Structures are given as C-alpha cells and as structure tokens.
Amino acid sequence: MVGLSHYLVVSAALFSLGMLGVLTRRNAVNVLMGVELILNSANINLVAFSRFGAGNLNGQLFAVFVIVIAAAEVAVALAIVLTLYRLRRTPNLDEADILKG
Amino acid sequence: MEEVVRSLGLFMPEIVVTAALLLVVLIDAGGAPWRNAAARLVTLAGLSLALGLAFGLQGRSASLFSGMLALDPLAVFFKVILIAASLLTVLLFTFRNSRELHGLGHGEFYALLLAVTLSNLLLAASNDVVMLYLALEMVSITSYVMVAYMKGDRMSNEASLKYLLFGAVSTGGMLYGLSLLYGMTGATGLPEIREFLATGLPEENRFGIYLVTFLVTAGFGFKVAAVPFHFWCPDVYQGAPTPVTAFLSVAPKAAGFAIMLRFFFAGFATPGTGPWDLTGTIDWPALLMTVSVLTMTLGNVAALTQTNMKRLLAYSSIAHAGYIMMGVVALSENGARGLMVYLAAYLFMNLGAFLVVTLVHLEDGTFDLRDYPGLYRRAPVLAVAMAVFLLSLVGIPPFVGFMGKLYVFAAVVEQGPQYYWYAVAGAVNAAIAAFYYFKILKTIVVDPGNEDKPAFRLAAVDQAWVVVLAALNVLPLLFWNVVEGWTHSSLTLLAGR
Image (cartoon, rainbow over all chains, first blue to last red; front, side, top):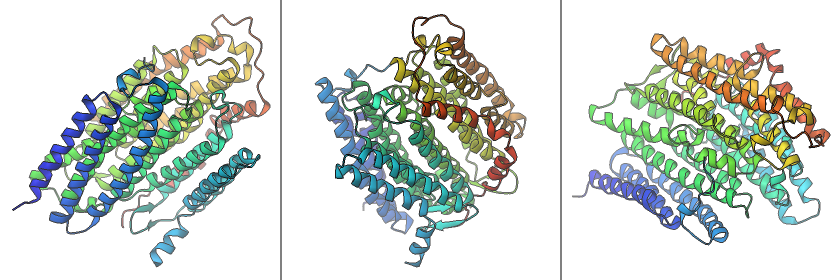
C-alpha cells in the first residue's frame, strides 16, 4: 500500500537532486532543470498532503498555480540565458564573472 | 459572487494599476509618435489615482476574495508606501536624465514598473500562502526583466542571470517549506495556520516547523537581501540601470518586509494587548535576530572598501535591511511601527542618493567614487542634497533616518535585558556605517581633483526634484504628530478570515 510517507520520500529526493543540480552544474540550462525539480518536488508534497491528510483541495489548487509560475519563470529565464549566449557565445554560468567585489 | 463583487470594490487601487498597465502596453503597441510621452503620462495618472484610492481605504478592515488578501490598516499603509515609491521613481528618473536608459523603449519600462507595483501591492496584502507565493514570484520575475533592461549590456545581463538563479532557488526552497506547512496544518490561510499552531504542536512536528521557518526565512531573506541570501544584491544593483536599482532598493524591499511582518505576526504569533504572544514554542525571533545582526555587520563591513557608488549603496541597503529587521524581531506593536517608520524614511533617503548618483553619471559618465571630488564646487545643490541624504542614512537628527533608527532601537530595548546586546550590536554598526557615509561626504567636499572640469549643467526639473527630496528628509519631523498618528492607527492586523 502506497501511503503519504512514500510520496514525501520521493519529493525529498527530488528536492535534493534539484538542489544538487543547481549547485553543481555549469550550464545554465541544466541549472534551470534543477530549479524545475525543486518546484515539482513541492508539487508532489502539496498534492500528496491534499490527498492523504488535509481533507481539502487547497493543496491541489496550489500545485496548479505553481505549474503556471514555473512556466512563466522558465520563459523569462530562457530569454535571459539566450541573451547571455548572444553576448558571450557561451551558456556556461562561471564565465559570467564581470561583476564582483 | 457577492463576495467577489464586494471584494472588487475594496480592490480599486490594484484595479487602477492593472488598467494603467494594460493601457501602457496598448499605447506602446500602437506605435504612434507620441507613445513615449503618453506612456509616462498614463503611468503617472494611474499611480496618482491609485495613491488617492489607497488613502481612501484607510480604516477599512475586510477579507477579500475568500481570504486570499487582507485589507487592514497595515495593508493600507504599505499600499500607500509602495505606490508612492513607484510614483516617485517615475517622477525622478526619466529617459532623459538616466544615461543608461538612452535609446531604450519607454513603454516596456513603464509597463514593467506597473507590473512590479501591482505584484508588490498583492504581496503586502497576502493573507494566504498561495497568494503569498504567487505574489512573491510575480515581483521576482518582473524584477528579473527590469534588471536585464539594457539588452546589449553584458553587466545588465549577468546581473539579471544571477538574480534569477538566486531567486529561483530561494523561492523554490520557500515553496517546499510552504508545502510542508500545509501538510502539517492542513490549511493555507494565515489565520487558520495560526489557529492550528495555537492549539499546540505534536512533538514529532517540532523539527518540521523549524525547517519550515528556515525555508520561509530564506525566501523572505532573498527578497529583502538579508545575509546569507544577499549575494545577488551588490551585483544586481551594479548591473541594473540606476533607476531600476533605485526602485528595487525601496519598493520590493518594503513589500518583502510587509509580508514578513504579516507572515510571522499573523501566522506564527497571536496579537494580544501590548507585546504579541508567541504561538507555540517556535523560537523564530532568535533566528531572525541572528540573521539581522549578521546582515547589518556584513553589509557595513563590505561597504567600507567599495568605490563604485552603486555597489556601495547596495551594501548599505543590505545593512539597512538588518536594522529594519529589528522591528520584526522585537515582536511588539512598537517594533512593527519602527519598521513602518524606517521603511517610509528609507524611501526618501535612498531614492535621493540614487538620484544624485544618476545625475553625476549623466554629466560625467561615471559611478566611481574616485571621480566625485570637486562635486561641491561644480554642483553645489547636488552636493548639499547628497549631504542631507547621507546624514539621513547615517541616522543623524534632524533627518528622517534618525527617527527610523530611534523607533526600531527603542522597540528592541524595551523588550528587556536579553535584547540589550542586540541593540548594542546595532549601535556599533551604525558607527561603522557613519564611517563610509562620511567618506563619501569628504570626497565630495574636501578632496582635491577635477579642478579643470566645468560646472554641472543640470536641468531645472532635476534640480527641483533633488531639492524636494532633500526637503522630504527634514519636513516630516515638523509634522511628526501626523506620522505618529498615522503609523499608530495602521497597527491593526486582520485576524479573522
């Protein structure tokens, strides 16, 4: 029988993987994939809590909004990464290093 | 349906801002030769009208859209502050006096500014974690675009990218925290969450609630640029066009503090008579106190060695976030009030400082402090006004910055002896800050250099605005009973749903 704790374990694993991806990847597109994993791990939490514990649909509603936000965020992010590529001919984040101090 | 109609009546400032936003987009898309002037005019008209409507909502208390938004005196206060911040930004910074914006599209800029304003208004009034997250992301995503406004500029692009990645991770973490909070309490509305927490928490949930507090603090900390979530701040402030920097340093910060206050006070604490009682046994003031002390110390120490004015003001704004947070930590009505006074004062002093920086860049094309000597001779009005802004930032009477510091420090000290070291840390930091603010002043007035450069050719309107802002740093003290009364009557949080 699959219960709440199974979902929570999966979501915690996804969150950790996403965080790992964000922290270790050089390529901006890969980092964005990590961000998506983080957002989706929260979605799993929300839907699982809504189904198993809370007794209301707020969580599922929240998850729908999160999906919309994730799409909007990625649209803006890709536009900025595209500009980065146009200006420097590289998608690598560690080569964007003119601002420091 | 009745609920929606009733809510719409109390939602007028936001509706007006939305209408202005759509109108600006349409005007810009129309491509008429007068579109630039019209976009600015519509923005100014929309914001002024919204400001008037927000004033008209004073004293109202209601829950809007099935508990998604709260309309209470605190929300109205922040609505006024946030709309005023946008209005001042549009009035002070134009495409003429900001060299960085020359040749860029006008309509998009005003549309983005209105979008940030709208999301700020929603964020400050959120009474439900769904609304809170949506508004926070809306502020962030529109700010990323504003920072990247100079499309062909590598610094602007890099700043925006750093802002975006940092923001995506912090708000992603915050969302995970909010999902856990929903799981533990079974509710998304802040009043219900408080009710649930007030009944006591099972022992096995103790770790969970600490995790939630930490993750949510990460999201808020990112928004207000608090250590250790401040890394984006200096780069973004340096890379973004100066008008955007000025706007981001006041408006989203104010909205961030508004929601921080609301989340912790309305969700995690019970308003009583006098100081708020903590709900359950969550020791979040200790966490925030540590964050606050680290924030002001790091901001001030890092600012000491900066020579780029935008970067210096970025570190100074990090330090100010630390002082402002004292108001949240005090967990009392006076603390909330100190936060409000400080944010209102910060609006005038910081926008003023950035306006002077913009005007110097317009004339000389430099942001470097080492090019500032001789300013006193070349532009006396700018130099005197800058002195006022800097002294206000230091927190010296008779300027509004002093009142802000006075209120937050007093609120912390009255909490008892265990808070004394915190006030001392704040005072030591204020002394460190005075060092670099006075260094700027010394460079402008005393240091030799630039003898051969001609006097500034300032437009009359720019000079007038500099003088008006300098006056706004002093005049409120003459009418302090008005400010006192207004902040006092704005201390009511909506408790029910």
